[in-house]
Image (cartoon, helix red, strand yellow):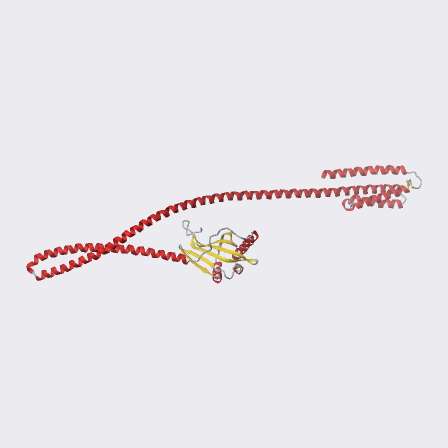
Length: 442
């Protein structure tokens, strides 16, 4: 482009010089003719001035006034000076100035045309450069997108490998559980047989105890009779004493046997009481599980929602979460339906407490929880049936670690909200709280 401008200027200079030479030659040729103005014909001056005006008009039509102001101004000045010279009867001067005005006007016209073309070329060049930049940016964006897709593919491969490993571990655990179940079934059968044997032995022991009790009572009566006879019949004393000693020996033996049978019977009673205690606790545990509120069924991942509905539901979940962290509790509560019933599960010292709460209790609990400084861990979204599910995980430090060997304790709060479309809005129709108190930050 710069070479083009330099070439244009050079051609204009040559043109100006050639025109000036020609005009001078013509003026010399016209000298001495009839109808003279001095030595110059009047008609020649009029023709030269008419040519100058025509050249100036042509230059003005291509906007030489703004694009080649110097040359155009010189043309007008020379034409005006030529008119003054003509009025003063200076033919040579008027002819020269008219030719000079023509030359300047044509130079201005040429410069204006060249400058206009140059501007068009520059505009086209800039437009092409802008197109190249746009294409380069588009290429960079595509490269970034490609890199992102490659990263996602790698993540999918890693997740697939983890899932495959998890499935393998679960299959192994299932196999181990099957073996343990079989082992437990065998042990239960053996324990049942042992229990039947113990119960049979206990029944025999009870019968024997009753029998030995009768024997001991009979021996006691015989001992009492013998002692009475010893006191009443002195001449048979030695015989009776010997019999008394023998009865006392038998009594001691029977007493020892009786004591042992009593201990066995007592042990059986303790085993039986322990068994009954375990059975009672098992019944209580089953009753507790049966009495607990039913949480939502397992998720299948199947949904009847369209892509637009899913996007709208996820946006509503995001706005609900933003209102919570912005402390705008009124707006946060506006997302709940009036008939909502929430499940609240609190785990404290390995003990689980469940209950269902209505909207009024939920509002009260939320205002209490909002007074604490909770930190966001993560937010996940899922879809199930006609619902979009948001799972928010929050944590709060309650007991800092005393030293490097201690563990800090936290309260961990997991909120699971189920949203469905109600008219043109999305509302929460179910929520599940899981609160773990004073636990390490898992």
